[in-house]
Structure formats: structure tokens, C-alpha cells
Length: 464
Figure 1 (spheres, rainbow, N blue to C red):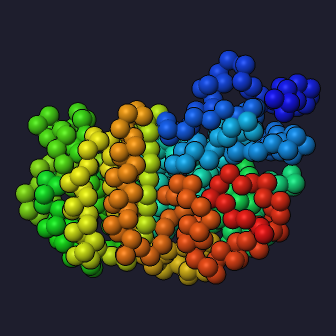
Figure 2 (figure 1 turned 90 degrees about the horizontal axis):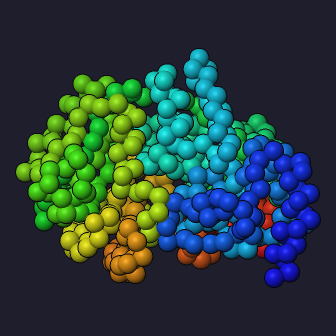
Figure 3 (figure 1 turned 45 degrees about the horizontal axis):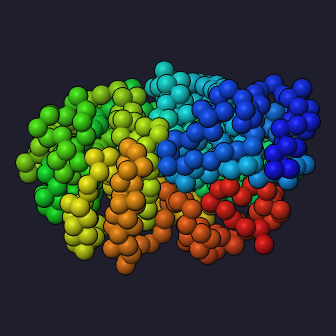
């Protein structure tokens, strides 16, 4: 096509002369590797991939994309469920080479570039017994996680990732580099804390660090899936007066084929309660004891361990290249009806890599004023993450339908949705993720910073 000839010709050659990073086109070695994203069900072929090393490269790539009228995808960790960090025929502005991390242990702050992954950040901060509240799979990108809010294992004690965000440096759609914080461009700072990549390309994040570990009491306790009603009712009561230090999730799946899982349990339907205590190990052991002693667990892996080890726990269940589909919703709590739905659909899991996570909210998350950030849903009780997954395309359609059916059964109890757990579900679902008032405010912000909707490969907030 004409556009492809133009992209592969003079304009890209001119960009390459001043570009410090790497320009990759379809005929170049490495193209297929660099167009791949975490979700193996996504197969898109960009016309050009601009692997940036810093702000100058990002601005140059933006200028080229705008001059050629190219659709642009922005890639940090490449970990979005719907694969929004890659596109067909357009440009991928790839930030994965931008790996700078600077920790100040005295000030308890960290400056983090946009290509950093969670595990890379954890490694640097845990050297000083510190952490940024972050997600649950270490090869997730810091950028995408943060811009959507950031839920993870220490959020009930220390808030969402955005609640420890001090500032960002951001390149706008017209190429201007701006700083956003409580003191500078406060409207933009409000928007990037939950509003995703709608307003520009964040090149660097500044975080406040919190003390965690290096040892924590953490891990899962498993029961047979048939015990789900009793387990979840006990779980609900046990959490009623739990301390902020305790963060948990209930997991439904088939027991994975991992060395730590007894061979006789592999493939059996199980429900697990996973905990992480963001305080002393002794206190954590005391708080977790009722969980470990309830009923007849089939496996107990809850123990003192390095925080870094716990952060990696889910990595084997979400590797690069498998096919992933998610439906998600917030609910007010685990009512008897919700528990009955979870029991019924959990027993219908067929894929060995399909799973459901019910993430406990509350604590510090709910004590931040709801209008303080663009993130919505601080008063929800749980976030359901319903994953219909398969290792290959075989069986993927059936897993997607299972996830949709589970989600639909929960529809009477939906109170909202976490934006980072959305697929490409349309404008109304994005509106639901923010609520009507915040959505109007975000649209006004979009008109100010990206009036042409250049940054639209995201959970998009249209400026019209």
C-alpha cells in the first residue's frame, strides 16, 4: 500500500539518522519478536516499531507518526489484556529500552523510567527493605499498571500504586514535555492517576517508597473446590475485622503442575485463599492461623518467605505467549448469592490455566477521598478477575465463553470495574469504569491535552 511504501522509505530513513534507539520495519531481523506482546491471542503487524531510549526519541517518533497520520500504540511492558500496546499498519512507540531506576533510600523515593517491569523495580527497592505498592505478576510494566491505578499485595496497608505516586514526566500529543504533580499541572496529575494513557506518554514516574519485608508471612492455602461455599463463608467472616496489614485474594482454578504441588493434586479443582501480611512475620503468623486451621486444607503453602519470592508467585500461571481473555467486575461483598455463583462456575473450569481471582479491597484503598484521583471504585469490597485462558488457540473460544458466562451470572451484583481488567469493551464500559462524574471530568481533560484523540489505543476517553 502507499502508506507502507512511505513508512519504509525516506521518512523513516530520516528519523533513523537522529534516533538513538532502534527502528524496526517488517523486513528487519527481530520484527516478529518485537511485535509480540504478552497475550498470545494478539497477532498484529505494525508498519514500524520505534524502540526509544529517552525523551528525544519519543518526541521524534511522535513527530513522524503525526506527519504521516499513523495510528500509534505505546508500549511499556506490553502486558495489557486486549493488546493495546501493538497495532496493525501503524507505529509502535516502544519504551521497553527505558530501564532507568534510581532509588533514594534516605528520602524513600524512586524515579522509574517507563520501560521498567515490576520485578525489576522490586529488586532495586527491596535491597533497602522498601517497595512501591504494585501488581502481582513481575513481568507487568510499571507504566500501564500505574496509570490504571495499581492493585497488589500491600495495597490495604499502603494504598494503590497511584497513592504513592509523587509526579510524572509526560510527553503530550504535540510533543511538549511537562511535569505533573500536586504542585504542577495538578489537573493532569489527577487524570494520570487512573486515567490510563489517554493524555500522553509518561516517560518517568516518581514514587514514594514504603517499608515492606524483606521477609513476609504469605502464600496460599488450598481446599477442594467442592468446599467453596464453606471456605468463602469462613473467609468472609474472618476478614470482617482483619488488620490493614493483611491483603488477600480467593483463587479458583485447577491445581497447577508445579514442583511445589503434590502430583496427586495436579489438575484437581481447588479454591485457595492467598494472603500477604505487610508487617512482622510473627504478627502475620498469628493473624493467618485461623485460615490455616480451617476445615481440611489439601495443601498449605502459607509461610514466612522473602517478599520478592511472593511477588513472583503467579508468574508461572501467566507466562508470555498463552491466550488470555478476562472479564471483570467489582462487587460490594461476598454475599451468599455471589458465593453460590462462584461455586457453580468454578466447578465448570476445564482449562488447566484458567483461573478466577477475587481481590480483597478496603483498608488504605478506601480511606483516600474518592475524588482525589481518577481511579474509581475505592469503596468496592472485591474485584473479580475472571480469566478464560488456554496455552494455545485450541479451546480458547470455549474458555472465553466460560468467562463471559461467569461474569454475566454476577451481573446483578456488579458495582463497577477496574479499568486495567477491561478488554476492548466499548465506550459505555469505560464510562462505567470511572462513573459519570469522573468520566465528564476526564473528557474535559482529554480535550485540553489531546483534543484530536491521537492517543486512542487505550481504554479510550474521547474528547468530543
